[in-house]
Length: 43
Image 1 (tube, rainbow, N blue to C red):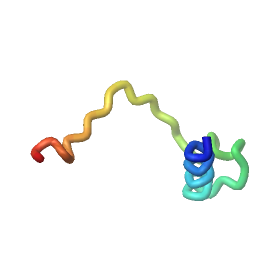
Image 2: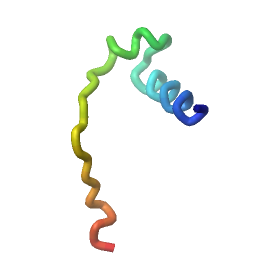
Image 3: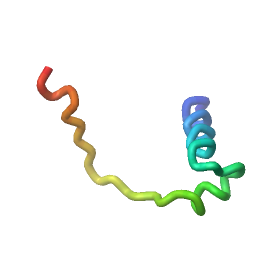
């Protein structure tokens, strides 16, 4: 789970949250139903 830990730490740093509790106050979470990335579609 180090990858998840590092991702959360990076996110907190990015939004300026010094504690995990602050993360919900400094961000807006959205639920993504489907994700389509067409970056590599033409290769």
